[in-house]
Image (cartoon, rainbow, N blue to C red; front, side, top):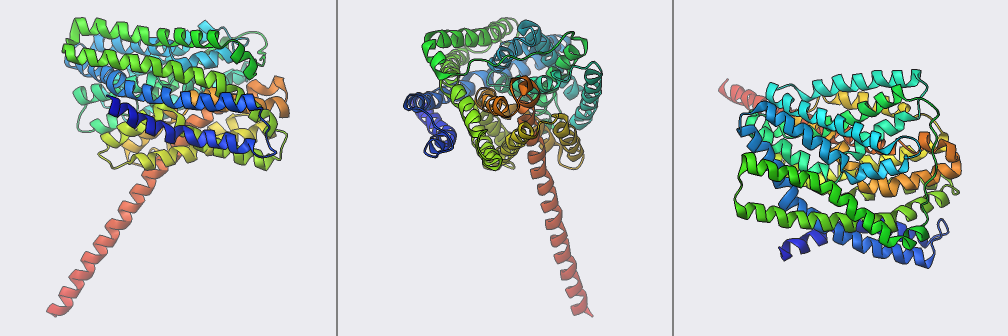
Length: 507
């Protein structure tokens, strides 16, 4: 176990170091000016982030992933289809309501919308679409067809929201699809998909095991759209307190709040798992012991990770945004791209995804290629988001062509690339995005457009981060198909040339 933890720590150092270096290098330039106290707290937070991520990743490997796989396979083998659907709905609801990323988003818009109403609505959306994900496997419905149908439905709802005059709900709605696929949700739902697909799927099990995150990301968007359609009154946004001093003064409160959030996040999943263990699964005691140990690693890892982000990374992100907004726009966009490229490496769920992708695809899609594609995609998305904050235009100018391009590519690339791409979109928008990059963009908007424009121009960032990997990953698939066809043509040409030579010799 110690050896595994050391390995995870090395991986975490590689992940966190790029973001840390960018911040520290910027501090050595006239562009930003952090105090000695801020640099010290940020550096300590970076170390804590490394430890927290290592513990979380280890816990995900030995607890969250096996739990999801066992529930998926055991419930599928039981032959009780309705029970399987009920379990999926309840688990989708529980893990979403408890997702720390969603709590972060809800806390930043609590003056706009009731937090409980927002989280419950989003939870219902995930639960319903998790059920649809299982139904898709059973009835062998192509993922691309479902995605096309529901995205068309989603954009039809956009029209209704605009008619109602509640445009401010749109960035929030699209962001909600990204924040629901965080460090708690991703390992569990992906593993659940693998378990279900391996038991009731067919020869396309590799494709079927992906796509769960993709569909579960649509449910929250549609749910918040409905809130926007029926909402009444003005939508106002109040800037939260992002100062590092306030977080340090309330350090004990921050850690206590984080502990409570993580307990609430894990408790429903654990309780429901043991109920299913008693009723259906009956796993060996040794297996249960491993899962319990893994849950402790997951718990402490998330507490350390989220506390470090709240105390050190969120205030630094906001201050960077406010100071860079006063610089040249080109510098601002370039720094935004660099931050986006680096921040993906620090997302805990990304490492769960890339490992499962390489395993499921038998190495056809390497972890390295996956990570590069995601980093480039997220870097571009954050640069485009900053450009939108500078020029002040609607998020729909990005999302409508972006999603249409993504859906169009889905009909020309291998289905497994489409499933992985849409899963990657949800996974890329994790806790580092909502607690470091979002405050950065809020700081930019506060300076360039004013506080009253933050909800329209800053929010929508998570949606952009979730969208661009859909294009970059599928581009990998398109390239793979094109390369394969070229190789086949070359091989065929060689065969024909060889045949021609034999004919000439014969003559």
